[in-house]
Length: 195
Image (cartoon, helix red, strand yellow):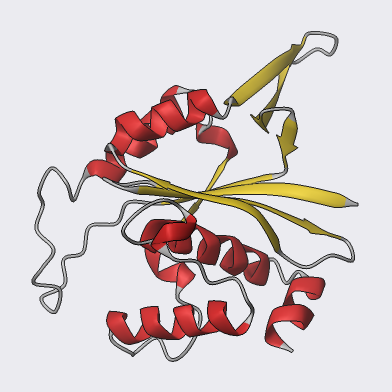
């Protein structure tokens, strides 16, 4: 059986990865996007790609139940993974300040929740995408190892791939998809990408 997932890294610039996996199929990215304009850009992307949440009420039983689904156009999504905003109160991260740009991911989360995706989202901490190397490594080294991992597996993209000066947020969305399948111990992905 084949499944579809969508990962989103919301922010001032947002990255999105539409991907598949299956009972015998490893992670396969179908399409990657990166776009500006923060929460507004995310809302426009959802509208343009016809990404929506739907629900149905079942009144047949004694207790009304709700069935929720997420859709990407006519593709039913089996997983929706979104990077969760995490403020860093870490003295080593002096470049992080609570600015409007820094909290834009929260507004992106609000867009998704407001459109009914809230109960369907599997939230992912930013650090979950950095599964290569020791957790003690500095962030820049973790990012470099992640990019090397993508290059080794022929999944690395550049800004020109997504029509931007860089592809950092699309890469983040792609890494979150792989990390999610890794946490799920999806054997075809583990064998194909980790040997």
